[in-house]
Length: 230
Image 1 (cartoon, rainbow, N blue to C red):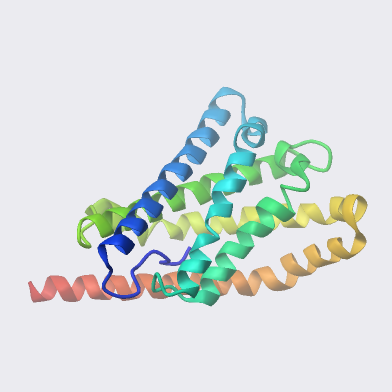
Image 2: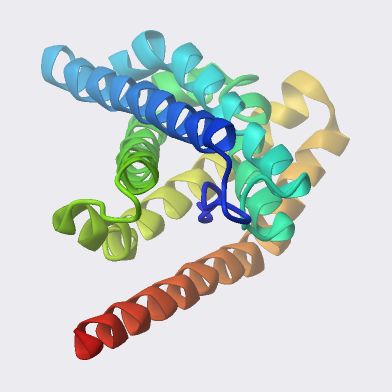
């Protein structure tokens, strides 16, 4: 997701404190999601992930809607369009796909072993990404822009693996939701999901991935410049 926790201007102590609290709390919530995913897979396998984690993850992700407001009101320096795209795409999953058709995540009914694995890999990718991102910003804000070097490296390199895993898992779940949407909701909703995964998801994924690549280039260039002047 976007750098939606960077301060939009020199922050007051109140704003800085709020952003530290927001990021720290979000990091803890996503670490809880990751811990539940790992624990469920160790104890019983992917079939246990949704029953133990699905509802908690849904509301944890829903909290991320605050980032749209942060961008909209200038609390942070994050592009509103890309922030909205990122948040909306996950809302579509937790509310419009697995929220309506939990069988897909559980691996029975309209789901199967692959849809269950896709849900597990999606949550693992989401949670790992967000633990890194929120921890990075919480520590950056609390240390004057000097997060641990390892966390800095992970922030701008881990997405090379985590993003493709997450986006492919999301797309598979949406595609698998087309049939139950037609039978359980409405044929129109089924068409919307099909159009979303076939026509909207590919360009959206490209836009978001290239946005992250652009961010990485800027940061890496700035880091090299800083080292050269020291």
